[in-house]
Amino acid sequence: MEENVIVGRNPVREALQAGRPVNKIFMSSKISAGVAGEIKAFAKERGIPVQVVDKQRLDRLAQGANHQGMVAIAAAKGYVDVDDLLCESAGDRLPLLFILDEINDPRNFGAILRTADAVGVDGVIIPRHRAVAITPAVAKTSAGAVEYVPVARVTNIARTIEYLKEKGFWIAGAHGDGGQLYWDVDFNVPLAIVVGGEDKGLSRLVRNKCDFLIKIPMAGRVGSLNASVAAALLMYEVLRQRRRD
Image (cartoon, rainbow, N blue to C red; front, top):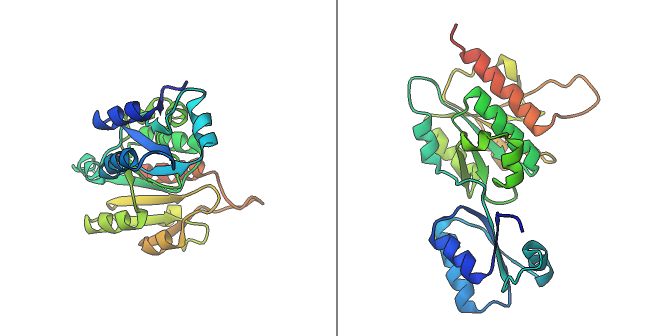
């Protein structure tokens, strides 16, 4: 069994009580109301999603172990709060954050973290739902960068963007219909760049929350770039503009 899979009611409860980073909890609808309520209360306090699934799903997750109707998926690394990223970005240099709007491919997420470490990004923000979390596959693809790039996991990306604006950040959204080419924009401001998911790109609500939209020119027949490639181009353009000779 994979080390990140926690099987059984007591092991899940103990992991939560010990403060172990957990991505998600799966439970059967047949668990007693008392046990389910206790676990859901723990999860709600720590912002951990809980999903009710059928026995077949739990059996697959538990890989033959006695799950007693409950399985949790532990994170490969703990998350931080958004305010922690703001502390990380405090100092003489201009802060740079990346917001990932529903990235679902662990290889993309891991590659983004690897580039973020190389460029010196202050932190990455991901949503709790409908997106890949910090999994062993993400950690492996990041080639160790997951240990150095702080990641905040939030309930609502749009509200987080509003909060960052209140803290003085400008929000740039990467979108194919953006009004400006990315290399024509002045990135010498406190900045958070939003990159959308592999299939849908930025959601309409998130696009509307951005201060401006930027695009990467496409001269070929393919309409868009891989999310991690797009993120890398944007990161290095910020680094280029902010370099000190």
